[in-house]
Length: 205
Image (cartoon, rainbow, N blue to C red; front, side, top):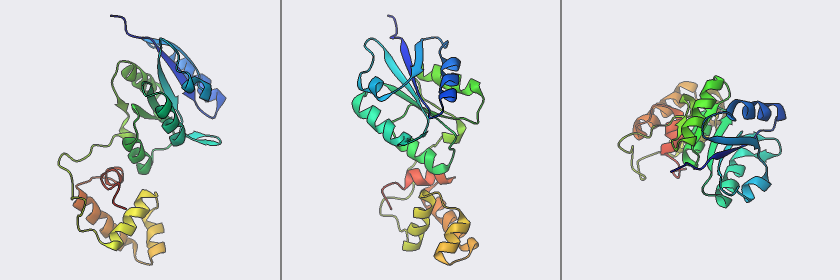
């Protein structure tokens, strides 16, 4: 039973980077070829090929998250690997909530990208450490958990990627107080970092 060969589509707003990615991944076993992806390609998925999209989150005029949604709407079968400079916790949380097959940071060695493509081509998922979110084994606080208005405000700021300094300034309280709120939120939802917290509390704010 032959596995269907995989065609890689690369979307990056820097042509040089896109070409570099193509050169790095085109000779991985199971990959039939790699080329620059465009809307035409995801609206007409290649016959006889499985597609694996490698997408940056910054695509010039377009937003990578929007492109991922569009590709998924049109082509449910394809696989998607996000390859980005952005390692912020809110990015990890958004990716965890999105239907993607993997994410790799551009600050990691080229070998990591190759490993991710090989894993996804083999039907697995691959998230490098910057994007790994392990939802707590037992769910944290329940939906109606007792979370104060002030904690909700802080949570909203964490989701927006604001620093503790910015939060303290906007709320007119000390950084220590902000840190106390953060710690309390982490405890309530059984989280160890901001990304897990954002993931656990989506829908709460």
